[in-house]
Image 1 (cartoon, rainbow, N blue to C red):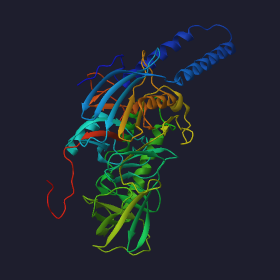
Image 2: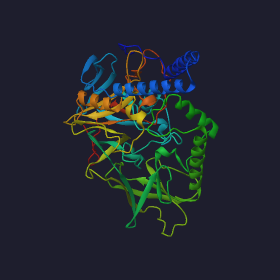
Image 3: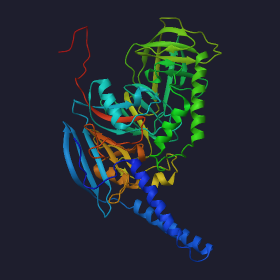
Length: 483
């Protein structure tokens, strides 16, 4: 079902991008036809106009959002409501929101990983559909989540799917949103530590699904099925696909964007790192219970090998670089794998996404970009498309928010404005997710930014979704099936 918005929007980011270039070109031609005064005088006037324009834009983008008007509201599933708001003012910000009662047993928060690979990318509508098909479930609504590395297509910051780590390493002091077994949300600056205990000896697991040093690396089902990871396609094709995504960036990244040559170097380096895994010792483990963060996961050794090995269906591979002076385990030996957070140690977490910055902390609005190490002023101050997540004081209601890029009649949002919006909606805690060209929201298979069409948007690495739980899982005790 297509959702009709009050204000007109650009049909695609690419169309908007081309029209912006065309209009800019016309303005430049018009200005260049008026060659009056000295070169020095013209330069000073031009600089003064630019400075005044930038100052006005900054003031507008940092204007306080004082009110929201509900334009449309409907229930899309029991305990799940979709709302659109407009902010006050002559050029309003359009806010799309999904509010979720996590206490309704049929609702569940899930993380959808593009292509089921740690380095996969998909557009949000295709990602939600493929997730629903693979998991035999209904995706009620979804938004984009983690930022991702332009050179390697891997999520930035911690990412956990159904208890399995996709990415464990933090980025700067960015925030993360972790969900426990009851989908209660905790936002904090998390660090995750991994360990493997075999024969009474504890070893650090320094990374997951990619090697960053000479330590132990864990590879799970998201690595692509084999270790080393098999890269399909040539580098030139991957660069072309990645460069196509940059058409939608428009400077919305928190970091400096990569050139084509930098992308080539990153992709080449990633392949070389993967190829080095051929010579390592690889211990294949079978999980003896379902994985989760802050929980001991008993495992059993299936075999030990080198070269290329397959990741077990319900298990993982630990890769150990040579030379290794310790003794390798025998088949059948049992051990423990554990991933632990630096905070909230006693909470069993099942899913996690990462972003930056924190927008609302304990009911107090105000973004924390400087604290988290974000300095890109365009990302902070400009009126961009945005995505965010939050929860109310009780922790029972979760909120997804997506704001489209501005048009002739509407505006995007600065981080300060987004912080105000999340507070006005009722969030006691809130965090910014990947935005700009990545921003999007799908409700009942429709992308809410676009009316009656299949949008061409930037591919993303991770989506955050609320899904319909087809049945409630119960424990089986003593071999007796639940009623």
